[in-house]
Amino acid sequence: MSDGEHCITILAGPPELERLRGFLEAAVTQLGVAEAPALDLVVAVNELVTNSVVHGYRGRQGLIELCVRGVGSSIEVRLRDEAPPFDPTTLPPPRIDLPPHLRPPGGMGLHLARHFSDELRYRVPPEGGNELTVVKRGVRTASQA
Amino acid sequence: MEIAVTQAQGRVPVTVFRITGPITSNVELEAQAQAAYDAGARNLLLDLSEVPYIATYGLRALHFIYTLLRTSAPDESDAAVRKGIGDGTFMSPHLKLLKPTPHAMEALKVAGYDMFLEIHRDYDKALSTF
Image (cartoon, rainbow over all chains, first blue to last red; front, side):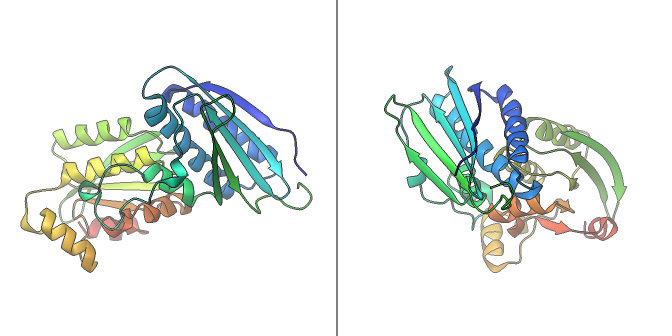
């Protein structure tokens, strides 16, 4: 069973990220998620949206839509953008056995997003662009689910 | 995010940044660190007890500060650092962290930053290690 969605659309750019984080934190709190898993979701989603801004749109103007919903004891956050299609879930994990200045660049945002979520699902919607769904399981109590 | 800067004295002078709020941008923290460095700071303790979480741009700022404070001493060379991290014997002598919150600590571990940055729970003990 799923609850109603909470959605927001932002311009793809760093100034909008704070608004998006605030919206997400408020939405998952309203859906009955405790502080620690709420922060997990905020960090995971922040990294994925940052990747969309930096690597997807690459400075171009565009929109990012975020929708949050409760599904049973889980939370699902769906992100959509209109950037060129790219599936980040296929990327390998970064080298963390080296100090940062000796590591190959990139991949840390996705690494954090994977760690702080339980599942990342990717698809190209019929209208194009990218859709990523972030799933966090077991974070809502029975009375809320 | 807010940064309160104080000076302390271990065996050497230590600049302490007490950060409040999530670290989601590298810009301000890097600018403050650069300003402290330009004013003569060579050892930095970051108090993360009021940082609810750290994003990758925050990790990027920590990397910037680590590099800024790194010297040309032989035990800080690339080869020494690579070997020391592999052996578990290298920690930055100039940048250390104090009391990260659980979520911030998790990000540091996931990113591997705990392999080269000392993490302390006690302020006085942290100062004494510089």
